[in-house]
Amino acid sequence: MLKIHTKIHTVQNLNCSSSSLPLIFCSDWGCSSYVYGEMFFNFNDSRMADELYKKVRILCWVMTGPNNLEKKTRHVKATWSRHCNVVVFMSSVDDPDFPTVGLGTKEGRDQLYWKTIRAFHYVYEHHRHEADWFLKADDDTYVIVDNLRWVLSNHTPEEPIYFGRRFKPYTKQGYMSGGAGYVLSKEALKRYVEGFKSKTCTHTTSVEDLAMGQCMEKVGVLAGDSRDTALRETFHPFVPEQHLTSKFPKSFWYWSYCYYPISEGPNCCSDISVSFHYVDSSLMYLLEYYTYHLRAFGYKYRYNPPISSKILYKLQKNKNTNLLIVRIRLNILGKCMFLI
Amino acid sequence: MTSPKNLQSRTVHARETWAKRCDVTLYMSSTETAFPTVALNVSEGRENLYWKTIRAFQYIHDKHLDQADWFFKADDDTFVVVENLHLILSSFNPEEPYYLGRRFSPFVKQGYMSGGAGYVLSKEALRRFVKGFETGECTHFSSIEDMALGKCMETMKVPVVDTRDVLGRHTFHPFPLDKYVIRKPPGPQAWHMIYDHYPVIEGPDCCSDYAVSFHYIRPVQMYMLQYMTYHLRPFAYKYRF
Picture 1 (tube, rainbow over the protein chains, first blue to last red):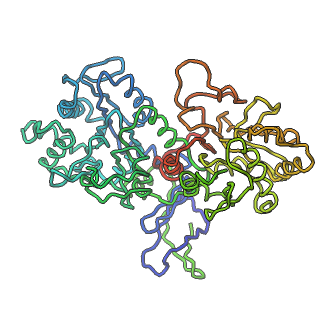
Picture 2: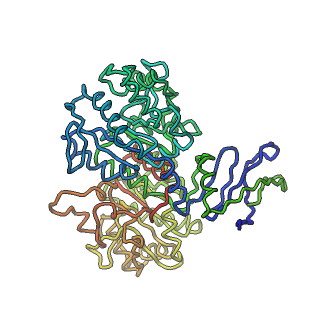
Picture 3: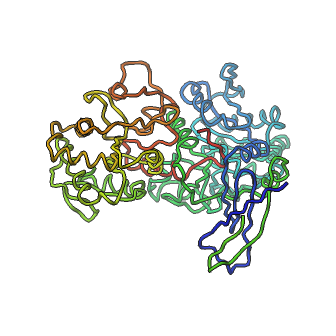
């Protein structure tokens, strides 16, 4: 039995003479309208989040070392990494108590790419069936995993693609900033591992993010565009304060590295940002509160990210959800209205 | 509450972020400017804070009483989530006397509200405050603005309100978030923890999801807090509170 809600919903500033019709979805958990790519959903339960958790499985591996466990890594463990489907802490040494995986390398900046190579191989060998996407983050990166699921929901793990904050130098298609975190599809991970087996990829440089980008290019993995539908960046190489308020001098490397045009001020950062870097231990807890708790009661957000039709279709098929799709557009007194 | 030297360094950032969300916003200073600021006919300086407060509330009572139901005082380094203030106030009748904020216990029997965290007077409370100074029941007996105002509220029989949420978490905060949510190493309690009337919990239970204010917020942090409150959110997340 389909539930039909009969409310008239007015949309301001809608061009009624346009030929594209608004698309309305109604279900037990609220009504939403699809108007020119914008969707307004009321999530009064966790069905959407649960679906995304099941369908966009993310394994997070955190690059760390024995000296950081107390000062930094345990705060990552207490905050954002809990939202990953699987989390693995990668170090040079095994620590069964934390726990961390020992990669058999030494510590130090020059070991970074060796650690990365071994970490991805470890994850491929031990965990590839547990996830669809594989994220690398530092122990001073803060990741909003729910928003990463949104970015990835429009793609499939069978695509050879990877996402992050795209930089342009040194490579043809660009590469992803290591500190801001980057995520490989299952196919990308498979090609990475096979690339080393076939010696297509090697330890070219200890600059981990650049070396990863060079390998990805060689094995045909696409450097994805992780910006939101308003073309705002989601992965960030600095803390929120700096992106929102700093005026970096034009000589600063950042200007010449970013693949896409840089926006300073409020347009720097998507409402559904995925990551920030150089986040110290205190800021981890502050960000967890600011993201998952603090909000303005009753506030109507101005930016509403569209939901991929793949996810919606899966929700529709779920027997617990009654979904009615109605395309009705009425032009009454010059105002566009539609029946929900 | 501001001053000429703070207008461009602090107040402009409060105006660009949260202050526009109030129904009426007034910037109280010692001099009139095109900011715009209201001239209170009081000199600047910490010792004049309570004089400024008295004059500010008298000015509002004379010129703006009908434009609002609730009257909220904040500093130029307070960040306020006005929607959450609406949420708390919506349960109360502004024609009754009410005085809300972060309750401190010392010096005043029923307690007084921290000045930095911001406090609210209902319309009736404002009437009584102004009347108290007309009849002499309230006087400028101290320059400590928040405590002195609290004493006047008690004298004029304006009751205090517990503004914590249903889980006992605070909504008004006299310090930035990190003072409360980050656990401190064991040691002597800081003064602000001793003044608090209701128990202060360290860690995530310190602060309500619907927090109203934070104090000692630097200008750069105003923009960060605005982004955190009105923009950044986890997609499809079902909030637990």
